[in-house]
Image 1 (tube, rainbow over the protein chains, first blue to last red):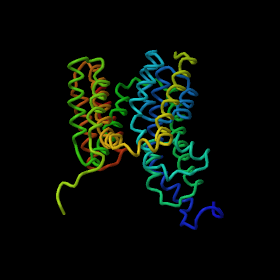
Image 2: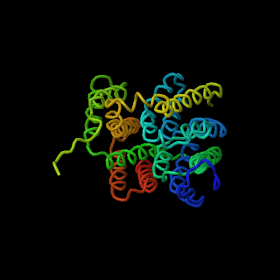
Image 3: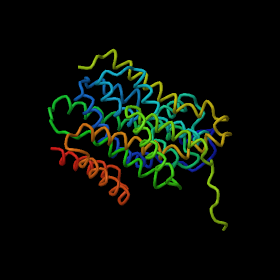
Image 4: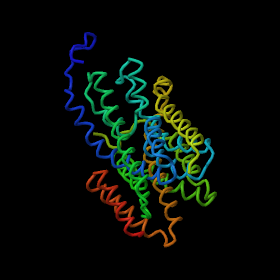
Length: 235
Length: 105
């Protein structure tokens, strides 16, 4: 896209930096994709189904969550609802990208489809004037890493009969990492305490529905949360 | 063995839900941008949801673990501390998982 007549003469980042932006994502996606592929195949899925999941769904946390639910044969609607809950945060990602994503329909909708936590963070760091092709390249590379990791993990999982207990703790560790990152960037730790108390309340009322109860309570509190930070001190 | 047709149904449902969530702001941009309640929710929910998913996963692991919640607590404390300190997602996840596997085997 060096000679796009419609684009304003904005500084364009060269392809090499698109790749370098995608490298940290690769370091997370390839191993995590491997863990997903491995766990899914060990749970009884054929290797190609793991690939289908990573191509069609492309949402790390919910793919992990689905493995034990699918293995237990839970209803499609239940898994869909759990997906809705786990991926709910993605609703808010688009808000800051409304003007940034390209207008070309295929590019726009692929980027919307590929809007994972990591792709979102890369897209928000790209400078204004980044070409459509470069944005799509970042998203395609990121999904490529995820699919590659899934394939590797699924192939290993199909060969190996590893009896190690606790590999699925990777998921808890992933949530812990994301919680710490949200905590560091949040300007209030109230959501953390609301979540913990909400879960305790849910557990006391209905242990089987503790998560759903706590999410409902968090949404309720969040609705009355101020949209912008009021200045706490006059400066 | 997992039934393929059922698994396909699950994956397609998940794909539709995920895409729907990601596309919603682009379809309802004006409504979402103009409602302070929605924006407040957007600022509040991410940390709350991550905390809940973490607690829920830990509770699930601890209930499957006959020796009690100590392995989970030690491993998650390690991940939290390591990530707060180093901010290297891969390092935190691998170290925490390796520690947990060691504690459980």
